[in-house]
Image 1 (tube, rainbow, N blue to C red):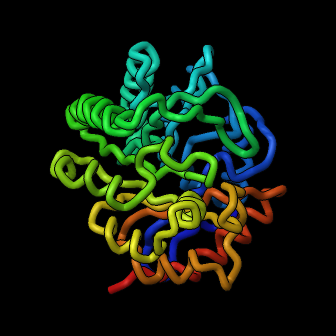
Image 2 (image 1 turned 30 degrees about the vertical axis):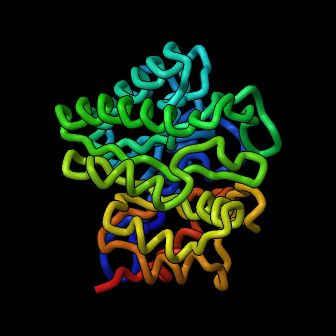
Length: 297
């Protein structure tokens, strides 16, 4: 078994997402493969299937886990949207998030991270993501933001009773989706989190999402990171060409590396979310990333 991965000289672990490997397999098998290669800090997310018995075994594990968004996948699938205008979907999303918080408490995970809200509910898949209809009215964004804030506050209240943090992830907004997603710009994110940060609400900054959204809206990525920096509780690290959420590994010349070296908050966990065809390639990239992420003094 390989040694555990921590960023250079600081002892802050790099987590790897279960979604880092292509394909899908039982969670216990994926975790076995991770463990065989010294990947013992794991974000539970996509790419795996599991049942309640497997979750019970996780609680007895000595490994460190995070829980992200749509995990574990429910028996009856739905699109999680805490801002949904459909009360049934919004309530189901809140219940799902609260159950995820319960899982975090069982696993000793410090926080649960969930995607930012959608102004309209998706109608299906389109390329690498969902297809969203256009808002029905000019004030749809404002009303969705209000619904999202109310839902987040309810979930946050439960998080506080469990002693678990709650992080909201910035959305990925390609050009076709402009005006249909919340938590896209720094103003969106800060207005949501700033007045609720004292209650344990923070941001999960996804670098791949940020790259696409910055191109769509024409804002500066570094300015975004500087604006949200006080509220960041974790980072998802991967890259793309700015047109879509491709989950590519960061190259040595990637803007992501310089951005994290400059703006990353000391001690804040990094989650590798790039896609790899082999566990060996994943471990090699995680080792390299660890050498790049030297926390600031």
